[in-house]
Image (tube, rainbow, N blue to C red; front, side, top):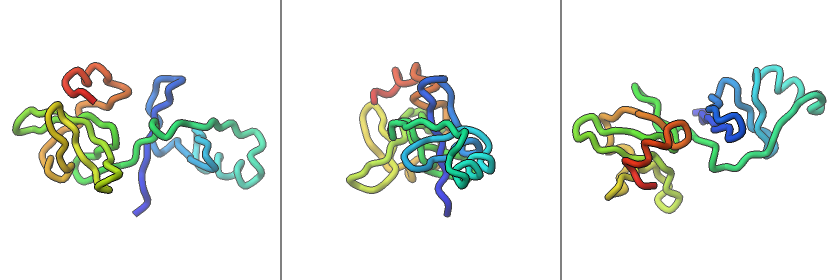
Length: 129
């Protein structure tokens, strides 16, 4: 499986999806993939990229009927509990951090994505990160 990513652009305050995102050599490039790769092959002439902080890069955590990325804010449909999706490097697993617990993302089978920590910071009042 090819990993899917999205990134938060802190300068433009906008989410970049994987259709216009290329990560190459520690830099991030926005635009049409084919054109970016052609410029990379030709020596990056005319290509503007910028380095980025990994904290703004979000990998796909789960994709079935519900696409969930790292740092998404999700709500359990049954209980109404809200949590933030995070990758736990110690357990090498995706987890959901709520106000009181840290649970496996796989245990949140029926949930909705209600936002993310960058575009909807007001939702973090529900969940302390």
